Image (cartoon, rainbow, N blue to C red; front, top):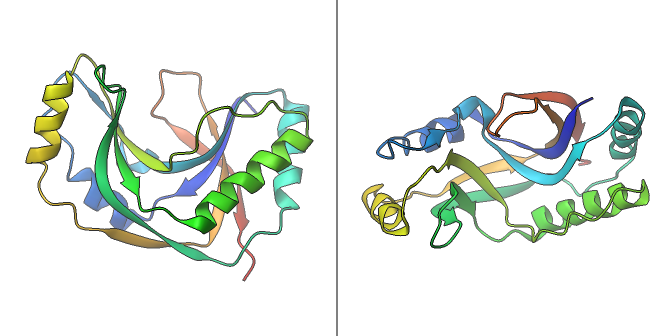
Length: 179
């Protein structure tokens, strides 16, 4: 298994609604809607033995019952040097708990802590040379953001090819939440 991360798949109706936010940023690289996801824990490049240990470890997690999340705004990572346009989520205690569970389980396997603050989001575009003013204008013109709610009833282990990001991603395993 190459580069791994855990995450949540985005239902097709939500992906479609988010795909309508595409366009208007000529220098940027838009993520294909089939690759939209919410990253729970980035793992990185691992050998096959470690990949199998991760898959087995995730299979043993006993997770809360299904819960809902709501995508409710557009945002930008990077401040004055914007890098990512994303769709953000309302705070969700169950989602944070699921992330923390992944973090603890992977550290028990010997992986280093992620070290980044968990900010659940769906990457829509990787920005290239857009200014902070360009992004403020884009978000203003993107129109009203109607909340998109969906139920999380599983998480997945993804693999990704070594690239500049944005997919394609392959689902290696699916793990149902316990009801």
